[in-house]
Length: 432
Image (tube, rainbow, N blue to C red):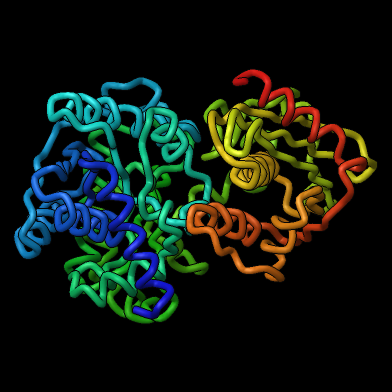
């Protein structure tokens, strides 16, 4: 690992040590393994590592959890979650993951209460902000912390640090729960989950490492990396009959290749659908005006104003933000009180909130205007971020901006940022 990654790893250790104990969800993936191993090394028995067993977890993944934990010397306990008992989960709306994570958090909270532990942790990194993840937002609303994110770690950082530590997961392919294989609106049943799991087992046994089988009723859509496509075609006479035995009439190869979260691509062209969801992305706030009332044109550039502050620095803090269309008309306002914080923390959280809101609405091009010269210069790379507690917030802002097609941020006088300033002050007053 390089020096920056070493500092992030040390920051992760400090974050975990300061909790005094954590209960964490463990999936056996690269993120959760680094988090689990670090938590165990720092906290010992005060790191309670938990894997959820349900129909959405492939048997191979549970076996992998056992092997990894045994090899690294930490123990984990298992719990049974019952996502399929939830009608909202089975209906498979774009909010499906929110119901799943809420179910998991309820179980982890119960364990935390039994153990006398306050902190519940999940393996989320900076790059996870690049996709639509309502489950992450739901977990945060229920009190989850994301230590990797707080330490400013990207997926590249997690893999590099894992490799340096000798963790067997450092190059493990990404894996998501089996429910992610279904188009939104397709009811999820135990039978369908088993069908997909068996299909993916066939690919695994054929030697593929990175793959997905997407369920489209009688069609199985296989995703593999482009370099693996010739081999998949070479063994199609072996694969197709086996898929037919599972109930798939047709077997197709996706020419776009493997990509995580491909079912979310159906949402990207429907910004109104994403904007109407009730679970907000991380660090967002409640909207003063509903975003769904605005018709978003991804080809147009929207202006984002934001501000944040505190009474006392640190003291009661809050932020405010405004999104305007290309004609200058306000289409949404947001504000939120965030408790005790400094001015800079409030300003960063305001920027994160308004950018997250814009992205959720389907906006892809923005001009950001702030009266904080420090934040603007840090985002533009003119100033270094020296304060450790601001580095994760800075990294989070950049991660969101990287998901947009086009952006720029500029400093403006306070007189040109009056609405966001007023909203921030109103938010501060609610906690003062």
